[in-house]
Image (cartoon, rainbow, N blue to C red; front, top):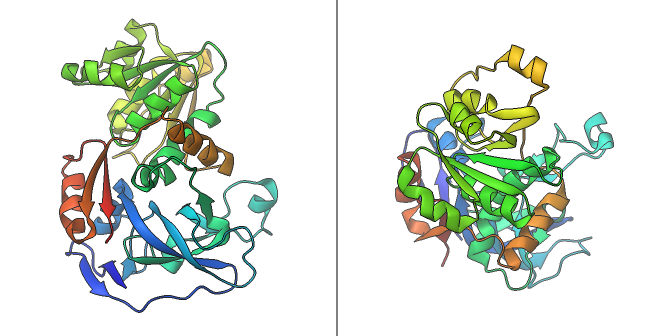
Length: 330
């Protein structure tokens, strides 16, 4: 099979031939059709993400199962599936017993990622893709979409609350659509006034032009009960926290570019909360896949052949990708 291999940091990724893998007990073999590109791929390229090299990257793969290992009963050959980050948990540690993130989980890093023609995955780490949802559209749902759905659900939105999305890019454009699809009043915060019409079309009820102080701009617009922060700017995140209404929650979905300064006094007297989020409950993934299958959430994509993975990574690193990039496999 052909696969894009990351051998050294800050070096070109190589498209090479590797032996076709075979599934062991509990595993499936997937013919990958599409794999999404994510900011984590840039972190891996820069050496900012702990990974043992060489490795095949790609953690937003979708395709069809072509072989199942012994003991796999919940999937069959021909099933259209995607693969999540944590594929198999130990089931025995205190975290597993509480139903939270397992520190001993096996991930795509242990078996190899989706930037390859074939991919091994644990059956427990796969999810069926609903009928009617194209494989290329499903790819970014398995990380970006999953993350923003978990962020919103873990913010515990109540009827009538207002959600503001800070950073309307690869994750943020999905967060706006998800909040709108769930019937929540949705604000999009942007520093670019010319994006107003586009963000309204995505489902925003109002667009807040932030300037240098998104928190003040949000307060001037009436504040928000929930802020979903998808930006990496620590300065903007800290500012947006001040735009929360009393008992508001800011949920950060990414790695900030520095320490986030929080107004602790304001947080104390207004009962504001700062939370983090990564892909969490499997029900969050199922929910956003169903929204996408119904056309209520539509990832905006740039699609490139697998052989152009280096070019796509460079575009992503330079901030030139318009929302989300996906690699198409032969």
